[in-house]
Length: 57
Length: 218
Image (tube, rainbow over all chains, first blue to last red; front, top):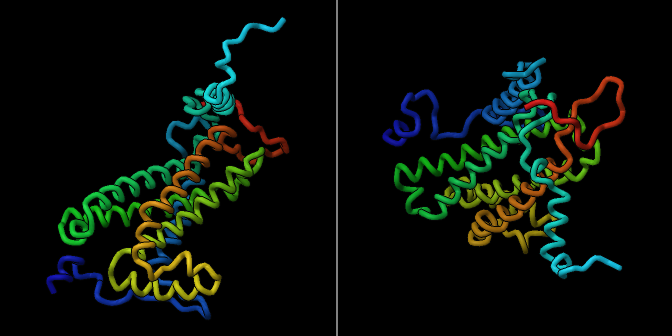
């Protein structure tokens, strides 16, 4: 209990077991890794379309 | 009659200095202006990767200096250990976006093939370096990763030289060998970027890619 309180004071995330995984045929990916990949795609799209501060275009 | 010479210009130091200045003039090595098209967020991710790498190296040096009895036990040690992990996560996050951006720009245009190749090899080298880092966590996670990875490395015939079950070898690979190789690759990559300039975006009706576009924006 003490360890859980230390690693996750909010109690929302269980650190004592493996995270959830998605299975699609031979493809297997953790939700955490998929979330990071999706976040990278979002940041990539934002980098393309958001105006850069101070640009004279 | 030839001009009198002192002989110093024939020394290897003088010749090396001449070639270095010719290849990397100071104003090109440390420019104060960039092309106007660099005013875009997509050009930020290369230097963001370098910043994350600096954080990885700094936290790694602190971990190496103070040792596992510190970073596995004390609160500050565990914080720096986490800082090392999360700066690696940020390093790969920004590097992958940098890779995507450069891929879709076809950044190997305009005699920049070697810049692309050194970047790609540095990316693969980073994976190897991070992999050995996961192997030396000295926990069940590192045991699991090493016992899974040994079969893959043995199957391609490199297990005798890259033995993931050999903790000492993996520790030295992670803190000395791979960072040295990666450091050389990164410096080479950045020098090539300085030499050839940042790749311009695709022009609508222009097939000629300048090697050093005119610098117009600060």
